[in-house]
Length: 590
Image 1 (cartoon, rainbow, N blue to C red):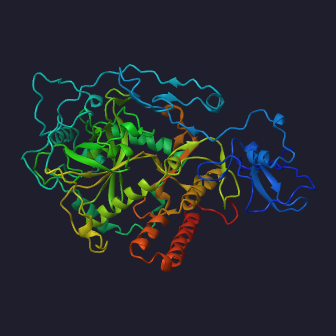
Image 2: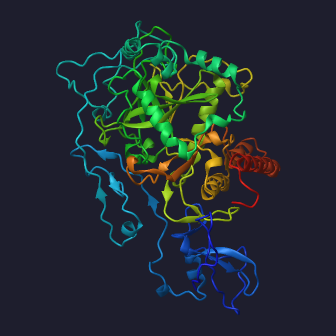
């Protein structure tokens, strides 16, 4: 039965402080055969609140204790009385972020999604009820933005065609843009976007150029990346400097500084600007997930054309995730991605990351003046090994089950963690891995020719980069500023990843992200007092299943399985050791 709190919390808030009194004559509970109870999809012990977690003796009158949940106690039946509780037992519930997606007018009934698109998370008190009435986010009044023909190389629309297309209207067909050969350049002349940016920079002066921090529009991205890396290191294993990360306390002031810097940058044409656009934090419903991505890239961020060429939109095809409808021959869902160097938000040893406006396939739209959202778009440097790493990252994301990309109510007990942790997401939401298509309709994939290339001597490539789209999840953490609960929570993320038999492969604090929360409320109401964490950067990630598949293909599965397993678990151990070091975890303080 529930007992009084037996511990005085000083610094730690999340703790198991209740004790379940056993019947002295009760049975011995084998360590390997506890009641299952209600668990998360990962299989961990789960309690809806901290008051639903208890210490319990496996052997009556013997001080060998473990942590059980209320639902496990109910299943055991010993001393359990449902009438002692103020609330019924409930299942873990996916917590939805503040909705930015919506359906365009007249399409309210075309989606079978439940909860419906645009439903505001009502909290557990509402959504654990027998009958749930969802509140749909209402439309705001926006100043309508007209997307002009800013993509140089796109023929003007005929007079009979609608000339005021918004991004939300552009997604249903791909015949309104001119595709290019992904392997070669075509026309001459600078892009309109590049010209407009150059003109704006001239007006702002050289200071604005330095603030942008990007190369000239016609400059090959690889040249800049090679120069950057020669000054640092080409190995991803190099430890980050102390000032790479920002603490939760400093992030608010840092964000203000970035806003001031952004205000001094040249304005981007409509469609490419991220100002005022909401960040996509929801899962894209399968029925509306993009099959085709039309990439508007007048500054050659994708490395699609040679310098001094007109940049026309380039077609990309989704490689993952795969859906059942892909085999059914349904009409392709077409999305539009708008790339600009000014929107770069991250630079690594092998890739760039951009905050990119995305127009989703019609009739899916968003609560913004243009109907667009922003996503994180990751592109590889023009080197074969960089392409290989991005391809591997896409494969890792495709391996992730959807439930580790979502937050759930309640608390988990993660083995090796002594304290409860929120049942949060582990990784960003995955919005697809895409490869370019050439003028012959062929997917551009040179993987077989470069699988054995070394990072010490990579090949320079002249074809467009793959594109990985995912949720943007904030800034790198600074563990020295963590609360003790936050340190445990971050450490639990890598443990949970390992229980899925996946290693991240490059665990540094720069690859743990923090953003204000909770994500269920509008961005302006979020706080770093309730942060949200995610693990990112899986270019060197591995899955145990991949090693088994490789062994089976080579006919050596039975002979080499144990050796492969030992090698993989050694990598898990090394990564845990690094995680403890990076997150400043004490030996018994988690």
